[in-house]
Image (cartoon, rainbow, N blue to C red; front, side, top):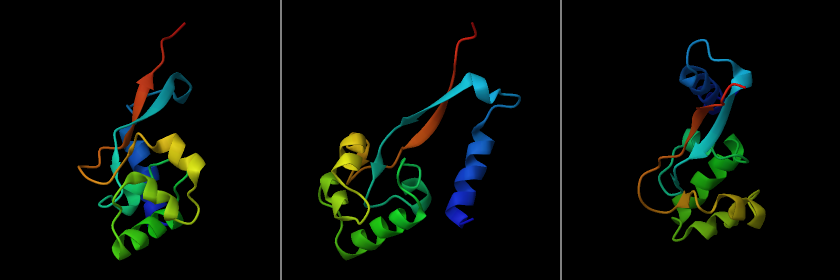
Length: 108
């Protein structure tokens, strides 16, 4: 298990409320991610981005920072489908605020 994967798994466990029942929770991804400044761990929060893809994003931005979010498609493994799904979350400036929020479902 990579350090990034371990960190994300630990963070997910820490964010759960004590005694929360997994069957009664839903998660929602909220916020935005700055492709030029996000850490490997922050990049891995995006569904479809694993440790290797996150490393590729960092390698590419070192050579030439992203000027617009659509340039993320230059990264091997990221294509138009990924971009369409996440374009509202992708930024090239400003802070990274992306994270999962646990939502309680109403009991029936």
